Length: 336
Image (cartoon, rainbow, N blue to C red; front, top):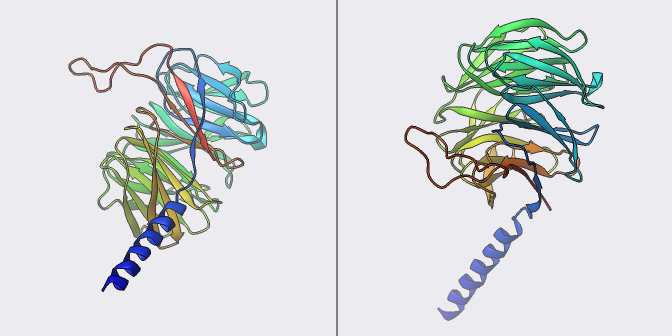
């Protein structure tokens, strides 16, 4: 009996050691202070020029992604949300929520090239490497604006039937976008600009961040009811439902490590491992800071970045979020 108990104890310790080895080793490497005031939303990495673009109130702050040094500022982007990078043409695009426009700028010297009128309250955006088009998702007009970066003209407006959030491309001609108020993912054709299918999210409410594994055709969507859903991008079939922290507004997938990171506004990062195309597990919960709800991945260094600030402890009646303390805005950098 004693020998059996000893063997069980040894087995339990071995299991603990195995679990301990599964920790990612990702931790806070640096904090990059940005002195100006204002809220924030998305941030985007420009791999080619080694820059990190951070939406911040009515401007975009640009940092060197490797050092955290300030590179410059793109001004007059009123109510900016997202930044798209079109490296093939050396251009960037900001979505300016308050003016229903996109600011086009030069990626090398950050000078403004032009302004483009888009839909109402443009929010998330990205540049599709397959179609070579920039997709802008408009929150209030419930549609997507498609921009040709060759001419900087709008070539299509796609009705989406609901409030869009983040979008991704499969690199083969299909675009996927979360629809927050209808709890679904819409699939678009990136060449014909038509809706191909709608995937209803079962058990997921108010989806925000979206990521994709192009190799296995898996979509990762994070929802306000503290779950991450994994879907088959080709069919919409639900593969997994995983618990995450509260207040997630972003998720990224590292194709090298096969890890998905959910940035949770409560002050945590949920790490999900893709064991196989049909098996996903929560591997770790990393401590971040309250308010750090969006995330950007550097696919070269495998570091990721989250913006946040320090807030007052209490809120006034009717105020959804606590008030930000001026001068505390910063970007958190995580890595090994």
